[in-house]
Length: 487
Image 1 (spheres, helix red, strand yellow):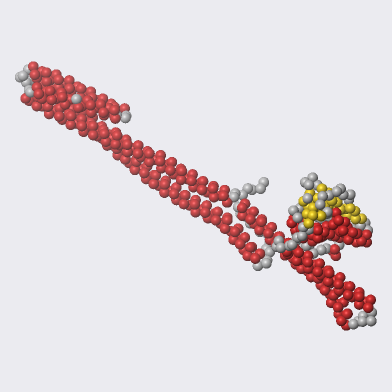
Image 2 (cartoon, one colour):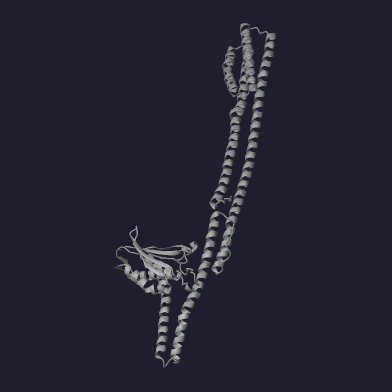
């Protein structure tokens, strides 16, 4: 199973998502822990500090009542008695608040014990005060007994209040320490996660940069070699898919450039030979005429003149083909369109090439044609296209073969011309490239290979006319070249 490679975008997204998740986790963790700190602080303020404040208030209430009590028993003044009971209201209110704040069973027990002791103290005071008011002559022994009981109750209440204060202070210290520990832990975790995030960013950046930069540098080196005219071996790099696709495209480009270079070299070699042959013939013939070798033989001189004329025509044809292709590629070619019938053009080509077909025993047939509408074309250029297709068919069809030419009005309303032969055929992998510049059809005989410009010129001409040209072939069974022209 082929291992799937992550794209650059996927790599970056995975890295960023990991960092974002880390940051989210850090935020959630810090929020929860700091919320715990806030709860501790709120508890300290709402419970511990309030408890301490209330216990202090209760002590003040007791002291106030004790003062009024002492004055009452000494002076026997009912005003102090009334003041005692008036100040008594403060204690139940305060102790009630303390009861609400009691958040443990032990605290609740202490508060209840304080309330019970206080209520006993009030009852004890009420009874002793009543006895004192009824009997103005004070009974020292009775008062001492009362005072002993009162002191024990007050001491018990004071002990309870001190214990509640101590518990509140201990809870406050505990909560403060816990909050401090949480804060330290948050700082430690935050520092660790930030350091981890920095390391992750550095690692992801380094890894992605290395995986991207290295193949790009390799591509740069190979591109420099190509710019210098050297075609390196195909690149094989381990990289993200995007750069892998770029490397594949680069390899294809190098192969294509190398092939084009080979085609150009082959073309130059071939065209040099094609031009050298007529030039050599012209040189030799003109040399003979200048030397007067056949001065007394007018017939031989006429033959030399004919050779010079024919070879000049060959030179002009080859040069014109090169110039025509250059003008077509630059879109500087002049076309002369007029409305005409296509059939005379086809018949003219058949008649022109029929003697070559007969010489090689090739059967050249024109399929029956229904009436075709006139079309707007450049007659000379379409004649050139038909001649190219028929010429190629003759080149690559063996002796005793057949060539059929057909012209129809197809279902798209366009005139379709086809040239079918029983020649050598074209390999399937080469079929889509036969119309490329410098690409030559490989026939059964090397001597019949052309310059590789004819079909490229034909494609330019048909394209300008608004039609299409294509080839169909089966190796060993022949080929069919077709083109369409709009009506």
